Figure 1 (tube, rainbow, N blue to C red):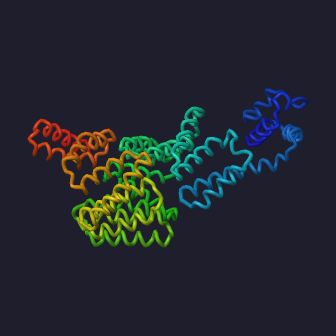
Figure 2: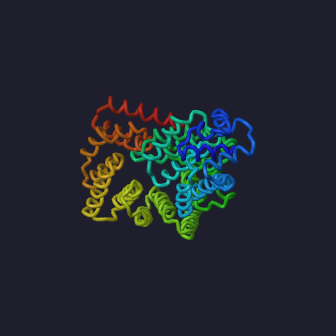
Figure 3: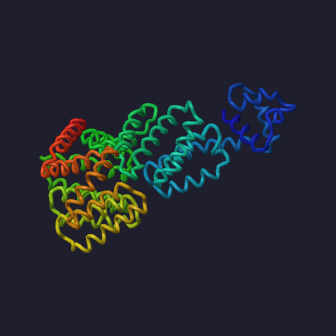
Length: 419
């Protein structure tokens, strides 16, 4: 009962034992039962406790009840990416004297973890996850599923080294969520993202569509753009797709994101749109949209490195920049990757530099000794296929047939695994 929670909070704050609070009123054992909500009690006892603790019990109960509504509102703001509201509710909650009460502590910590995920603070997120796993062995149904959602998002977002292994872990974790207990279909989007990262196109599309329907039903327009962009990426692999319709879909989404003043969404869509041109070897248009996406991500970050790498690859393959300018920009990308301690982009920019310098032999040696083993260790299927094929062709050309057969068998096994 709420009265017990309030009494316990203020008794602890006053530094009183249960025996000291109950002296002349009731036994310490009865005080404990009242605080835990496991016994009935008279209003007179609560009044006497309140007088001893110098509190207005009705006012404090009202404040306690408001806390639950504030936590719900904070969760909604996080889901809808309303960042001003997110910060405002966080500040309000931090000022609440009851925020770490036994009733709300787990929920508050879980939402705090989601807050840190929004800011890509994975260290604070994992600290909260580990603390909850250590201190709460039997969470209520909603909180138990929210914890699974947070852990799944942690695996999904913590991609500093682009580990597909983490994306598989995200899928395994998110699939454990019981939607009937949780009631938050938002996690379908995160499942879609995890499947997309593992190149499971059908499952990515299915869950993105479920997420899109939910976001439309809840008027969550920013997240609807995310879900629809995932669907477009998966649909674009269909050889029968009408590219004119695909282009128009991207232009519509880009327009919507600009209207919503969401530069992060606009940048993501521009990058994905550029990819469609790049796949069709329309390098000039690809470069144009990659450049626009890059300009929207000014800070040194993993996203910045991704877009810079994409921009330079399209420029290089389309012969759209001078060699000196390409090399200078690629070296800049490598330096940023080193500063961020991001091995994934250190490898990719090193390979790009070898390509720009036309150092084929050095590139293949680096691929064999460093790049391919790295992609293999991270279980990065797409890059394993791409660079494994290069190595296979190299082994055949050099008549290293044993290595060629080994690589061929490995690549066939990888394809079989994906299907």
